[in-house]
Image (cartoon, rainbow, N blue to C red; front, side):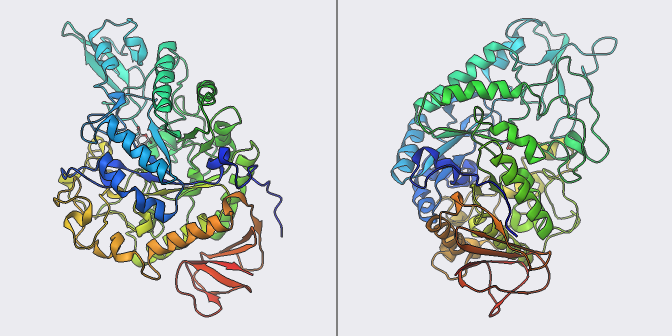
Length: 569
Ligand code: GLC
């Protein structure tokens, strides 16, 4: 059977202006990538020194999670100054040096933009607190009077994505209990009022600040949340977990149940699109810059609205990330993704891991429900078996990198890193952990500094051996230098897959489904390559062809469970 899925790419391989349509983009989480100063927190100079290893890996671009001035209550997604680097990470000069080295290596640089909220330490918020209710300073955020007799109850019933109420009451400058402000995330992350033209103007300036410094694009945080329904009406999420009660980042609507839930009054409002159209005009003043939406919106047909021709260029495909290791479900999400994004002439994207989800080397072997953002700890049900998780992760990555469009990798997945499940409670820093009183472990387990050298202090993360989250004792085999040049290692699998993807221009290809392998197998042709992924328990016969890539050992002409193979004919 040949699918009639439109080819998602209109670019020629040489088409530099469309680099993002087929790019593999590697996410760096600066706190945990490489630490040049040795204080236990990664930094820009550390990243710069390690960039050659990313060029060697074969990725096209790096996306840096926030490195801006921040009290770090939410790993830097609480920005106190959008136009400067936090001293913990370095300086603007360090950023310029990073960018120069990246560009010299042929790597694009995408930075994170956090427009839904600032840090409560941002000067705008401080000014708001120091000003009277109704003042222009307060109008940059969502301050409201409380309900109840003396305003002692929150203005509505919204809950924070991280747990607890989405409102905090302030003490007015005269010392009396005062208004409340909205924070969809932590109380240190007040939401902006995006209906206010001054907020819009300030963000245009922030875009230009970084565009003028040569960044190749922005990953836009919470790109489905900036506009709230007028009047901020109460909202109770559906019993199935829905968008506010369930996932920490609030997938909307519940992606797993597929239920057609009502749209919450703070997610996916039509008004956000006007903002992106405006930003697109700014980006189009520059060459080849892109906007990437972090929008937890389902189904892909709805998410595709974020990447209409005059809006953003890409959106993370979280429907794909949330798909279990299941043949029928993978085929379905691949079809719907390519059709939805292709329908608006955007490339599909693919992603399996990031700094907000359980690493896919563990997630794909979980045997119990684990809503996104909850994380896993020592007493979580359905603990993953490490070997099974790694086999599935390698197979899932080999499948993902064979798909047309653009793919995202998260630092450490090329080493096969598992989630760290047994972090000491005292080391946890995710606001989710605190706001749920430890009921949800949160996301620290995927943020542990990554291992570079098996025998070095902190596995080569730095020279001093300190690390803001403790690294497990058994990570030496995962270290980059344990895997480099070793046949069959996860690092070499990624390198080989990225090289073959490029050689065959798979990112610019299309999916032509192949039948006859049984329901647990995902099989297709892309640009003359045959890709077969076995999600089932039994081995299947391999079709004819020469093996170009295998995610695990093959048993002569059969493809074992949890293995993906690429064949040339
Ligand atoms: C996004 C980020 C996440 C952060 C949240 C609030 O979902 O990826 O890490 O906590 O937004 O900014």
